Length: 453
Ligand SMILES: Cc1ncc(COP(=O)(O)O)c(C=O)c1O
Image (cartoon, rainbow, N blue to C red):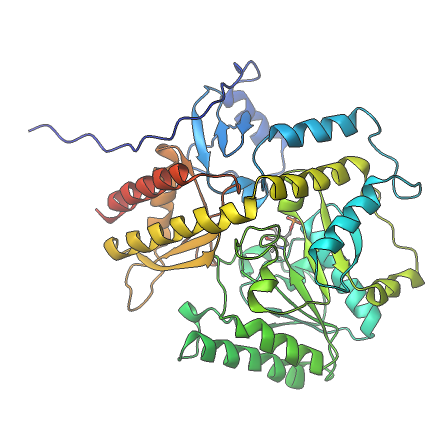
């Protein structure tokens, strides 16, 4: 009897023909990476993938092979790779004036700030633009400290807020920390994720007990007053973990009792990705004092922002604060194009509908595959945690790697995360279709079957 060839799901058709690639070979690129690039820049996959072109939700390697991108440049490509309208708008700006800094007037800077104010709850209407999520969180913390006169910050365990000295201090994962002195005065509260909580009870009870830990931290580890509480509405790098909606409501109330401002890190959850809402914090019915954003706001261009209330922003005017590229006309054009495309193409609604189909599909896979211990997230920000045993919840780290490699082999690119590297992270560009989702689910089904053999 001959062995059956492994099934290979068929990717939906797509109207784009990649240009013939004429640059250095994959081997040459790999050799240059190894010789000249900093060794801390790591590569995905046993056989690193070279990506030379993108179109909407698809990427192409140097041979013209197409891949469905379900991680979006780490949750950054919100509208689509080289989305034609985005390209047109950014190119037009590039050809007109590329850089001035905010020392001169240019319309794009206040235009984008005004558009963001229109997306925020009333009062959150002043924006400072920077270039990365880490910078945005640095600035948010600086403003909170300057405004309140307090130094201590409460962040949440398993959170990721960046790699600069200040944001590394906020981050709560040994994987991403170095043994150097970083942000002083940061304390990490118990995570409200019900799947791995030390507490027992309903998700709401776990959320309440986790929020109460903030009070303990303030009372035992700080001078009794804090500058801020910072949290991602859904933890991204941490493995798409989230508490019940009462978590942020109770956490914000406690932080405010002790003088703290509430910072929502919307670097991954913002711009409609969670489907039901434009901002992740809206899913919990809270209003932050400061919102930080990056990634999706620029669809791949270096753009990030901090939006807050005027009186908090004023605290930063007591000294000079400047950011050379913050507010530059090209990034601003990119941000304006992103907002237009999200609205015109209904991408938030697409995240809700297509994301709902994907989550239901993942839950169906969980009913058939013992490896999946938990499926969570909202809209197009989803995760599936793989465990060896549903009782002990032993992380299935090796199996996750196997599923991830097999998915790539079948043409599907996904991310992985969680402190044990056992969560499949699924966060595609928001333009994906139902047909893409069905293909991705078939690929994951097959990849899980292979890993369970
Ligand atoms: C929630 C969150 N905050 C902040 C950051 C840091 O952003 P950047 O890498 O642009 O500095 C990240 C990056 O992954 C993130 O996921």
